[in-house]
Length: 445
Image 1 (cartoon, rainbow, N blue to C red):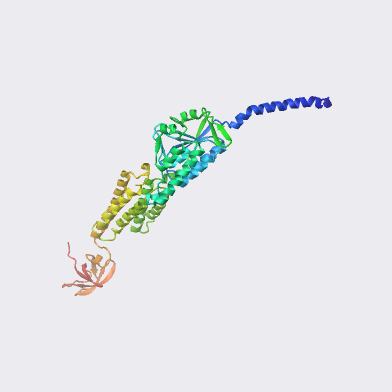
Image 2: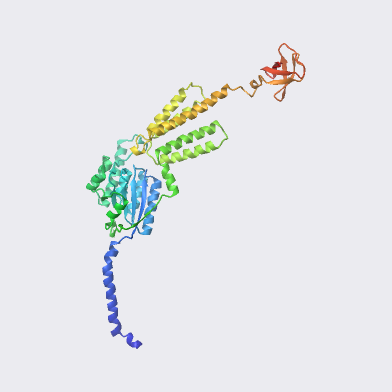
């Protein structure tokens, strides 16, 4: 019985049949495996504000998490631009991602300007909400400092080559991309869709998921996936506490306030040595301000004028200028504040109300210090020889006219001016002559 079960005449036909079934099943499933049908999970992340190193770290972490979960990720974009190095890091991560990366410029009123244009074009799928815009990617020199025509030409040439390479890699309008860098051109969502800069327009995230469903995306050469997003579950990836803190610093108003508060703290420490707290706080604020300024496009002439203005205000505490130095310091501070972000994008400039508020605080702070100084000058001197005038003491020996008196806890030589004072009588100091006090009898009230 066993011998018959394993005879070739019985086993081989059945083996061929099983193999045939496996081959048929594999052939039927091959298109699905080749297409790489994605699962019903979509990660989402918010990229808002300046593109800086913390943002690049955040996007890198989001893409890594999406690859680990084998899920597409949607980056909701709203940025005025930012650091070129951070932008290059983000673009590199997106171009080498093994899962679909979708950039969605949203909500209504958002924009993907400058660095945001590079990032949007690098997405596997680029989408925009109605009422948004994209473009104006011309390089801005750090601090808006003067640069030679050769340097400007090199910067623009680098930007053009970079954005054209991205557009060609994603099969988007390379001519429009070049114009965005060379001529700072920009487009609305509808015009960008018409010019084949983006792939679709969606009202909101739910609408975007419906539009993405069934779309085939070439993740990399030879690997195409089909998005399955219509009924997908979304999972938001938040910034970490450290990323959020460092990203919040990358704003000109924050840098401006930190720098001003830092200088005030150091001045307060110099004015009252040994308090420690103002000095430590001032140094910390200044270091944070310098970090913020390092990732922003600011005018360093403006920074210098702000520091000069604060320095002049400090100098006025130690020199007699009848207010001239103070006025000059306030003018330098205001002009520096205006120049600080004069070359930045509209969304990254200092607001007038912030400049007015900080100027008022600075002016009030120094006015308070000057008032304290003037008040102290009018106070009666309580130490030294001058502080003894008017002090009441007691004669320890007869004064006719010379003798000794006990004043402010000390025994002094004394002399009267035309009168005799007996021992133990109260005296009042009228003057100081070297180490001898001039006294007279204290009159009974």
